[in-house]
Length: 431
Image (tube, rainbow, N blue to C red):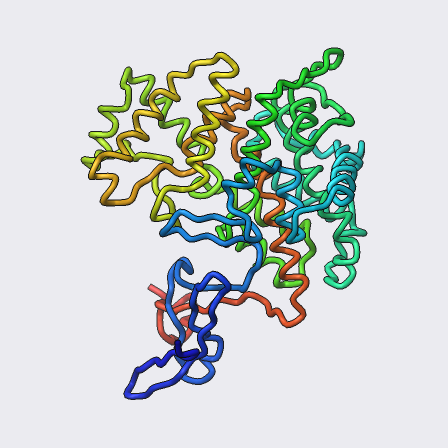
């Protein structure tokens, strides 16, 4: 195969190098296109633009493939857990026993939030949106821990092995504190517990009655976080990389990613699924009428949790989490009418030509909300839970940017469509 691509325009022909990834992905290297020709590529939303080279996550949306550092998500979901997968995503290899223990120790040692930092919560009303609180508090990490946030890549990379687990652990603690604060409950200090059990302890313990871990709940939470650990160059991850490209420290870059995650088209998708399922249930429908209305394009009957900006096949995470959802509810002895509706919608998507021809398969958001509901997590906390899971991916992508000594600041171009040159008119001469 030729390692160049020919582009013809204006009766001219230029050649551009072709970059081939390790999985066979091909890209036309257009870095010199504007300099050589005066042209740029227009690609609204960057859907066909490769903004970076990355060794973290491989995603093949056409075939429903997702791998972290080469390991299929199906194998990680079956054999690994969130902490180990976080290490893999950040460092590129599965940890040995010594590395795993050290990483877990650092997560445990950095779980607590200092008293001074806790005072931030007093500035929020109890009705404050959880993501609004999370974006503010994560951003403040750069102020409370400046030794890890010097805005000097060389220096910040020296402290990275401490800053990375600290970030994951404290985002988890902050999320638990947000839940407690919004419900008028006292904060619960972390204990020497495994990562997910510690989170559930900080969320649901009473001051004098500690939360009792339930193995089925712990496994479900582990899986939920693991499946969200990274997902290639999505909106929030790309935002982290863009901010990092300016030389910004890890905390600041991640806080920008949290802001991007707060949007309803990104991190809010699983909440939208729950609102949809609840609305269907409230109407006394099993999903049949809703599907018919959605297919007819009736306003207000948009089918949430189906389709994906990248996947043109079944989201592999949805297969895993859908099965886990069934198992969790069965083990807990719970039934959920919303799950019954979800199953009906899923079967319609897998067998109805309307969905098949449009490749509208259930995505991970379709089931993640039901699992969180079963865990006792309210709908308005879903997106901050997403942020815990995605922390390793954000950290790993920040590290790639910071480690690239030949990197440049992200600076997309635009096609200007505004007014052409015009002269200033004094105020007294304007109509």
